[in-house]
Length: 317
Image: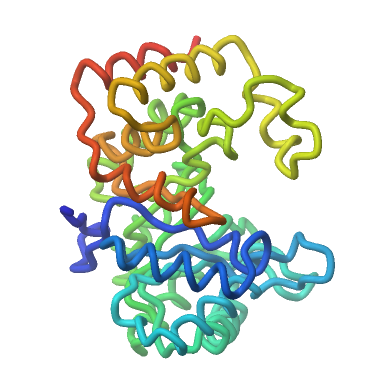
């Protein structure tokens, strides 16, 4: 399996990232350990989480996913086999949010403690913080990099002009520079990325690690009508995909999946992996069966004709 560099760094990852949002939420400790073991045993090496996962669950306060990963590191001894990515900046409480220097330094220490490690491979700004000067944020990251607690930094959910300004300041002030970017991108949600983000990230050697790669599960083919949303935790997130265009994408995925003796989820991820502006998509699983659908994606080489078929089916108007 060919690995891909993150930005201009020496860090290499396999072309699929395990999304850790499920750990401590829809996957308990035992299942999380099974999934992480199976993922790394299959040759993959990158796991993405955030300090805020999974604060949205009643009774949780954030940090649950990092805590599970830390327990797995201690139990498995596989810390050196994983490129660990986590994030800072999402609101955990009124006093725990944003990208100020003081908060980033403290949040990094908290994450390291939960993760039971002394370094983070990729530390990312989860959301932009317009109230904090960009240089202050970058100075915090630079200090963490120089201390050896962080290897490289990335950003997520930034407007392109803010990402561009951050990189400019990094170069001007000789500070740590964002090497990766996390945008929403999948077969359905293409327009913003392909028109606005990729024209900046690709020529500037910023690696793209896309999230919502399966459109909240819609691209697995699980939801083909509103009736399928009844009782689903994702109903509010999936309903927007139930359009004529969405169903056209599912039809094309079904046809391609049949041709490759595969399934829609695997084909959706294979399309992302083949995209010239994507380094690796993020995807989550809560069972070994789901995980296999994800890990099979890097082993499928879609033909140019197949990619064109999926592109045509998912083109936006």
